[in-house]
Length: 320
Image 1 (cartoon, one colour):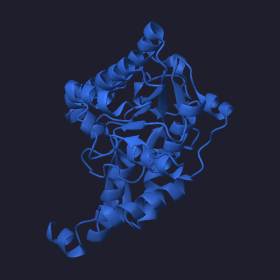
Image 2: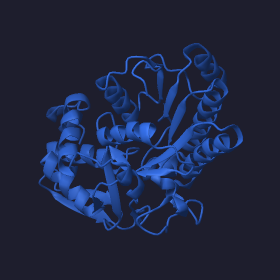
Image 3: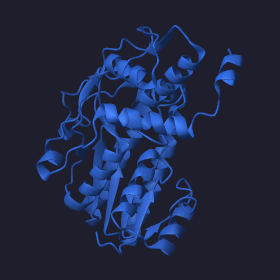
């Protein structure tokens, strides 16, 4: 990727999109097109086509598409699936039509079968039933990967797919209703601390295992893969430590400074019992994450306190 190359990060307002734009600028790339608010509406085929015709990006990072935690996937599966299907179809098709030098599509670890052998490898994709709590979103992400693969095979399009571990960091969705586990718990524990709540209840048994990746490390991995990987099959972006939801909640409580009890509700869904990625291929190519889990949590909480906290102690207590 020449420093003068024209680069489009589709999904520039997402956490990974923002991290990618920051990393590209830090590396000296200046021809970044479609940077918000200049990004077209990606679910509008006409606007996407007009944008590609005008901007002529040479490289595309496709990081767009709505996502959410278990709550969002259960309450809005059609919204999440349709948005991701439309975004992938429009951006990938136009990238092929305009002859981009390379496109990187971010799929999701949710796309692996619920009971895939652990740690999960790309050859397990499409070999078994998906996790029911996020199957609609997962199918959309699988469709994006298969569309990239189809253009490679039919047209020789230089499209690759990456599957990241569960990412988190600044600009995340910290809503308790729709956010992923780390940002949602961070807000809940922060507000529980302000209210002096005796306990916080966490969905599920706490025994499920997850692999988390700081969004800054994920941006670094995406840029590395764009430069170094050109395979037909997806490549996993992981290599972080695997940790239970119980331990994750304990770490978040320590970072937030919440002293109360953490109670787990086994009547609520756990999601996949274990979700760790086999990162052998990206490690073989020379990439590993550089940020410890504790440091990533501390930086995320510091960002949350600076940018997301809009209610002071009096207002939070008044709402109780």
